[in-house]
Length: 318
Image 1 (spheres, one colour):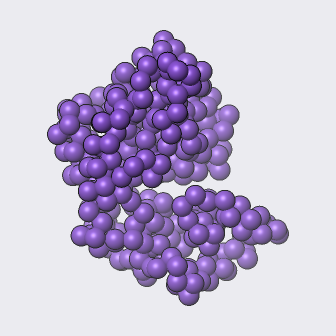
Image 2: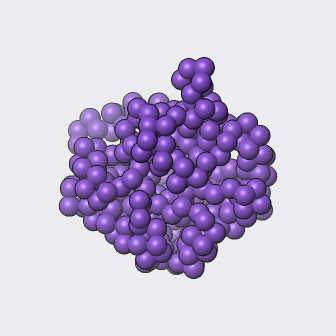
């Protein structure tokens, strides 16, 4: 991070956040997030050591091929969480900063709890280092694995799970099964069953507390925050056909239009996942920039604007 291309130019370090909350004061202190105090410290460090730019400034750099002449960062926040209006925005405004917030539309428009967050809170409700508790989740998935996974696919997934930056192999396997590998209707049934078992049976109330609503979005726009697309239901886009991918993007774009954020809209791909089909759709819909989860600084003069890299908050001092 913060490595210059040469002696006079720098990449833009795009920093990615998700949960930002006073973790020990919440019902789920194990959720993989950034403590609110650590966020404040990190903002102080970034402010002291980098120039934090707005999305408008970043897009001008992409348009012109301009490079940063000093260490430069851009702050991005994924998933449309209430944390972002209650914790993040006040901290930014106190410093005269703005951020780019990438929201999935289904939770905001339909008050729908997404599978990705069901899974995260299921895992936050157990001790991921407790083999018996992790095994209980895998055991619940086993009948579906036997019925729906192709021969040899489980072994492939177990092998792939060794490469994660932040999770144990078993946790990565659970995430892959429940995020993408099993048929969608099976995944939804399993995550609903496990969520009711380990978290709560009142999904509606939980979703109401977890996500931003339309008034929150409008308040963020009015405060100068950039609102971008995180698709509709936070699916792995490459596991969808072209029609499904386009529906995911167009549905969220309609939400951006409703809050006045569709002009020069930007996107963060869910899980960073995209393919040539995704790129063709984003280009056809005139997306101004799109972010992946590939780790690195954004080279504004050379990087493709629809496949921009980002750093995780954990890559910077806290």
